Image 1 (cartoon, one colour):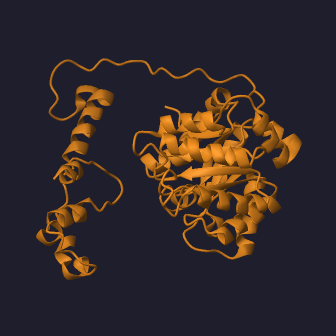
Image 2 (tube, one colour; image 1 turned 60 degrees about the vertical axis):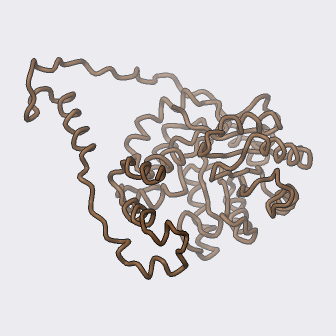
Image 3 (spheres, helix red, strand yellow; image 1 turned 45 degrees about the horizontal axis):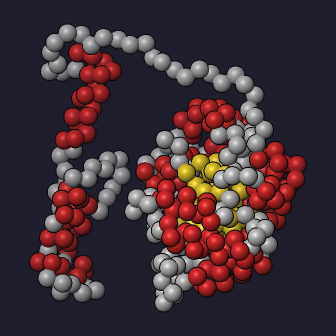
Length: 358
């Protein structure tokens, strides 16, 4: 009943959802009795019959916005005319961007970049605002125009970041299918505006930035063009930690001259020694990845499962075994423990963590 209420109170506009279907499942007597089988959906086509919402909340917000922007011209509005206020714009950035790790990468190459990261005193940050943050919260719908407008301020405020994650993942297909933009233009425009901070992307191994396996030569060519268009750090991952898929991404990025940051997909609970995903599982996987010639090791906690104690245990073990390999930790704040887990990872020896500026 709590879940039903939460779903009914959820408001999502602009994209299709399965909320109506899920509500039908939750109230179905067979499901509630625990008698549903694998043919449950097939046997009950009525689950797909649901009415569309009235979208009252959006209409109310639109009316209030009309009042705020255009004043009392809105239909039905009464009272004094809405006062006009001058727009307050942030001051234009006139300063030349300060030197960052991008310049270290340009002068010393990927290996020199990794060495500089490892020798850095203190915790480095990756800002995910331009990729994973709006992919997770806004269905990746932030436009190139808006990202480029903010870019000079980002170059100034975040000049000392490990990287800016701004490409790959779902940004590529969303730009083409929904925003009707060229993802390559986005990368090149951002590179022009932010010359001092390394750019980072998510590469799904043999899947590239798509949802199926692609020929090896296309992955190699994609990485080569990406580097020449301004990409620097490639976080290579596979949702199943399948090393052969990871190895293709590692080889392609290495051949293109990019920084190979290979990710371990975190699952289960490393504190549970009886679990398949125990400490030895992750250490064995890290050993395989290091033997492939990676520059940085990432822990990718895409479900927000990494608890602070688990972060301490995992990062400590990885740091002890790989003292010269930079460790970069990514999480989602699904359970509300993200900040605590990142602090624990930092205390245990992580070199960089992912954040999103507010």
